[in-house]
Length: 77
Image 1 (tube, rainbow, N blue to C red):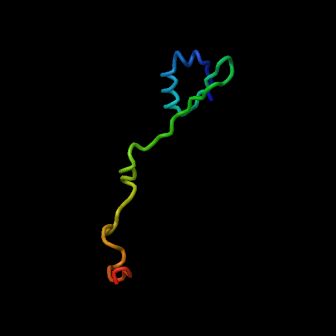
Image 2: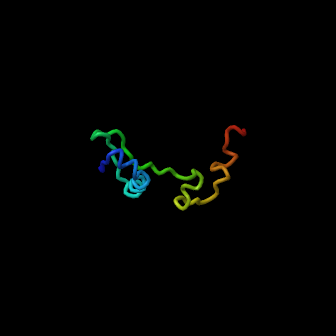
Image 3: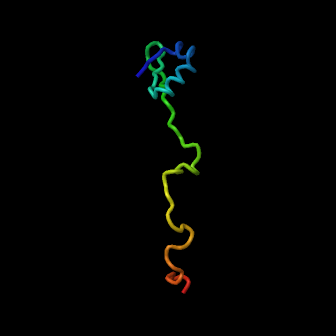
């Protein structure tokens, strides 16, 4: 894990954030030699829940009609 002083992080924070994003390696930020913060890559979140399984699932058959015939339903009797 990389470590860098706070002053150096302040001067290069955008570049350091890009490096953490691309390498997925955290960086510890120190002040007077003591760790005060850790910059870690953010967890990737799916952009949208709808369509997130596109291409992963195949629908086979009729998904609208009931699986059991209407004659077998006890409620309708």
